[in-house]
Length: 114
Length: 114
Image (tube, rainbow over all chains, first blue to last red; front, side):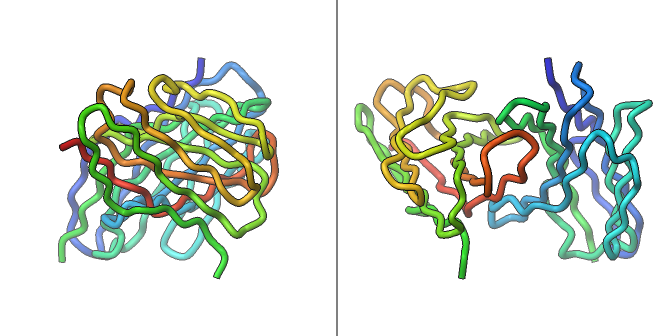
């Protein structure tokens, strides 16, 4: 069975702090895909990143970085120098190879205070 | 502009009433999906369609129905059999069928029961 766990439900930081959002996943497959989405107060899910199970390279995109570690089944997301506009709910999701389904974690609400 | 549109933004349902949520995309995407989001929860898959005139049940299909008569449209009907329909409904699409494809989401429809 597939499962995604986002243990933190809510985090509050002050602007310019760094913050890491944890994501732990479970799957029996060797081929799978991991995603992060951002859901601002407007409600629409915004795609941030996709990673397949064969690519463990970490990625940096501006203030965002992702750390994928198969050994610990984790795909953590770090925001450096957080800004108020980063306030949102962030979802980690897993797609198992051979399946159309995305399995979502319960999300983590990030509040960045000025 | 290419994208996914959902209407209406808010929808009110009376007891015993069927209501239909619209989802349209002009991205020429093959596959389309419907998800339900409850407060503090991740998204759960209701139905998905990989091709016109074909669709499959997701994890929580009971009380819902869909159709896919056109590539760009995937309406969701919430029937009177759905006893707890109050939720945020999100439509998504992917460019191609198959696993691992990135799902792009519409702005959502919030359904409330009167």
